[in-house]
Length: 319
Ligand SMILES: [Zn+2]
Ligand SMILES: [Zn+2]
Image (cartoon, rainbow, N blue to C red; front, side):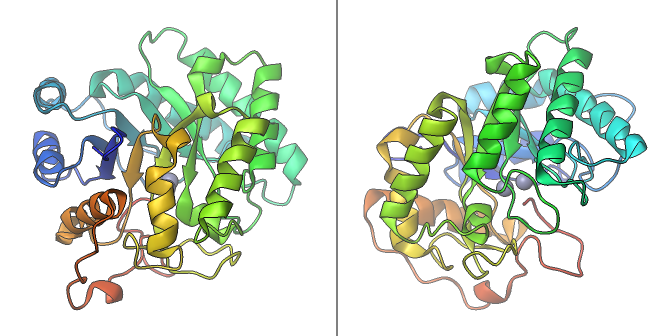
C-alpha cells in the first residue's frame, strides 16, 4: 500500500504455485497481484481451471491482497485484419474472462494490438468489434473481470499508442453498446515513455492524467503499470527498467506514485528480474520513493538483467 492508500502490486510468476505467489506478494510488501492466467505465449488453454484456485482465493482474502489482474496472452490481437487470428483472439480472451471468476480477478488486461497495415482507424473499429464479441461471449459469466486495454509502446502497426487513440477505442466500444463498467484502460508508464510521453517531468504526468480525464474519464482508468524504461523517449521500443533506475527516473516515478488523481488506481510493477529477488527490491523502491525516502543502491548486476521485452529472446516477464 502506498502512503496515500493506493494499492501497489507486482506481476508475479505462478509456476511454483498460486498460493505461493500470494504469500510472496505479502512478503515483499505488495498489496495487489497480477499473474498470467495461462501460458502467455500460446493459444492453447489448459483443459480445466487450476485445482489451487479455491486456496488461492482464500489466501488473497486472508492477506488482503488485491485487486487481482490477469495478464492475457500476448498472441491476442483484436485489431488486425486476419479473420482466423481475430476469431482465435476473441475465443482466448473470452476464455480468460470466464476463468477470471475462479481467480477472483477484477481485471483481464490485454494489449490493444496491431492493425497490421490496415490503418489505425480500421484497426480501432476492428478492436471495438472484437471487444463487443468478447463481451457477448461472456454474457453468461456473472462476476467476470473487467476487460482492461493497455496502451501500446507504438512499435509496428500499433493501435492505442496515444490517449487520443485510446479515446477513439472507448468511443467505438460505446457505439457498440459495450457497458461502461465492463471495459477499462491501463496506462503502462514504460509504453507511454516509448510513445513519447516525457514522464520524467512531473508536469508531463499531470498533463497525461488531465488529457486522459478530459478525453476518456479517469473513472475508466482501471490500472497503472508502473515500469521505468530503458529505451529512448519516443523510440517505440518497449524495455522495462527497475523503478527509478531508468530514463523516467526518480523524479518522474515520485509523481506517478503520488499524483492525487491516481490514488484510486491499483498500480502494478512489471520490472526485470521478478523471480530473482528484484520483485522485493522494486516494491521497496516504489514505497521509498512514494514516502520521500532516498533509494538504496541497486545490487551489482541489476542493470544487466534483461528488460522484460528485449528483442531476440522470449519474454521472461510481462510487458
Ligand atoms: Zn502488458
Ligand atoms: Zn504493461
